[in-house]
Image 1 (cartoon, rainbow, N blue to C red):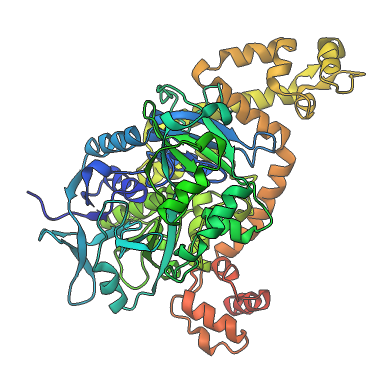
Image 2 (cartoon, helix red, strand yellow; image 1 turned 45 degrees about the horizontal axis):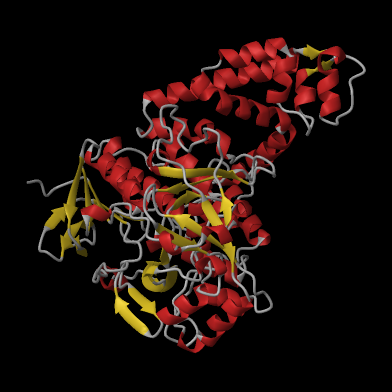
Length: 626
């Protein structure tokens, strides 16, 4: 029996799974501690992965060598590319997953990761030496494990408290115990901590839903998927989702239940998510709106259980049942269980470095909801970074960070470290100033070299990336050089409602027209058709799309890259660790206070701290020049 490791990961949610897999793959002897090995990577809320900006994060995880994309593809029962009517910077993949298969596949992955061990137990105490350095973990069952690098991914379990109406009970998830001890221990060491709230909706028996009164929402019928590995495909039976709407009658019942709502009777004091609000928050915030869209999402390939997306609630059980019965499709619906809210501890993320190592305790890392975020994807992205850096530290190698112009994960972590959170943090495309550079189609080009450098992405991923780059660039080169004559495309241009050609035109100029794309032009341009057909079939659509995006949007991409390069100069100007900002009187009082508290590592980081003005940044630049 082994009790000494290089890295210990506490918690096997989405952050913990990615952290443990990354640490072990890089080469650190790793232990993953979880309360229940049958609930690894549990989808505590909706059975879906991806969405606006979240889908980009999943593709980034895959590009780096993480597993969330692969697991989701194998467990997917529906796939959709959201925002296709907008530009490619907004395209966001999303998949419904089979909840049980998703967890089982993750367990299979972890059990077959060399260098990774698992222990079923509840971690309730960290071990420190007499110099305050972290050294291990004790569990409530009496086990003691040792490692100089610990990654905490406790999710909603730290002092978790659940609410259904006026009924409250401890737990980290329904029918799972809360975890006590770690918050109190770290608070005594000087860590700042607070409480947040999240929630989940009712689950319904699909046999009691009248789907004839709901609107079907099918998935895409193409072969899209999250992972860049061509052999990873969707193999499960694909299923439809459905939409329904609330009414005035629904809202009236919910308003009647507000006095017993924990959110409005003072029972819950913590902060809930702004962008995924409970149904009772919706009827209060949008009092003039009675029609709220709800999504009925299947929980698996064969199960009858449905998740009511948009109806998160901590209302009394009878209010939830009565309100749902006013929706025609759900008039006779039978509940599997009611919705509930949960309060839990989190730690102020400004106490972290960009590596997700804590500033107060070297070797202690935090990832996921413990940092004030919400969402599986945000947690998984943090978990990968924290686990990889814990392993790199254990092996005596240089740790890595992701800049804002390279990854949404970099935007997420930079926002947490520099700005902190006053509500559960959720990623959106609007949070990224370089979203044209952070498209879902090219995460492999941006990040696979980084994944390979740290030892997470294997050689095959690098080879696939280079192969894709070569085919993509050949398509772009052909489009830039090949002249298309009017007779070749006369009928196509007329059918597409775009102006005819008067003379020969470069193929790239035609591709840039909004009405045209490569697939429409290829049958009329033999050289283009021949090149496309020579691309390996399993990767053809992905490569053609990548080339087309670069051709259509090359001007916008180049302009944004120029801006990013200019601003990145500030990121290279490192600030000394021993600056006493309180003595720099030329900086504003608020600026001195914020700089002293956050201790930014670069001028770029300092410029993004709320309360640090442009004039304060100029003072820092002058000081650095001197």
